[in-house]
Length: 87
Image (cartoon, rainbow, N blue to C red):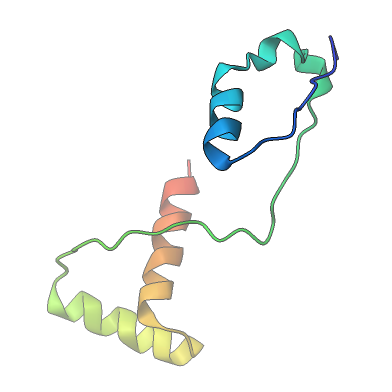
């Protein structure tokens, strides 16, 4: 750490926002000061998409999901994730 940050008492949120906007953190931290962290309980954000599948394929996916006792959309997500991670 290069030098400590002196954080003043703020009268309101706007004053605090202005303080943090002006502050250059590179003058206070070295790259070696940082530690890698993980957030295991953080849910990834998702967005709806529209995907056209042949009827027979969707039927087979739904049947397979029913056998596994899981929602078919979750099964489709698993298939996509496996396909993307496969090399």
